[in-house]
Image (tube, rainbow over all chains, first blue to last red; front, side, top):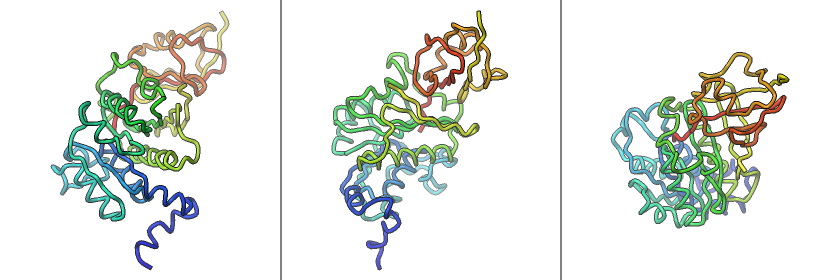
Length: 233
Length: 78
């Protein structure tokens, strides 16, 4: 039996063959390929999402080594989008990868994500998150959003008609550029935990299955083992 | 004014403001979330999300006996 027949063997019967096939025809954009995005893109590729657009204009720095799965010592200085492309191709050659080694801004973000069924927000700036909300709204696609600080994290899902980040970060004219992570840094296991929840929510949205964190916020804090789903609406 | 008890949870950097007996914190009846924040010297702009009993509220919410109050700073890292 070759790789082709065996690849998704352990996805069954958690997923049905029909769902596996649905994932194969799905297109997901991952915006930000750092602590969250590096984990998200690998988990989506292994689960079987057929097309990934991987967006990040940054290159790896040594300070990324503490948490970013795609970052190795040899890759310091390498564009994150290129590293992500190489990794996904090595893990699952059946996945179509569209790497975008460019910074997203108001002029180009819509075009980067408009063909996707869903976008996963793995950004590290609150302003950029609102920019993504606007672009995803225009593209009429849902957003699976994760954010981390230290050993705390949060995940939510919103659709174009939802209030999205307005419910979490408040008025746009009073936003801090960065969240509290500018003081706490980010720890690897928290980043990957949040990335795993984002991957799970993405698969659920794509399959229309399970309870999605729409208008809800899953918050977690690992010193106290707090895991709670909060109502945002 | 009658005293009531709440459960207070302060997350991430706000944990520095956590009082003793946060799990059984005494306040006066009629106290709002904002009054709790002021009493604990928590800067109002340091709090982005206020949850009471798992539901989002604003700082004018008047706390009741047994409420679970959670305060979150802005979290935006990736």
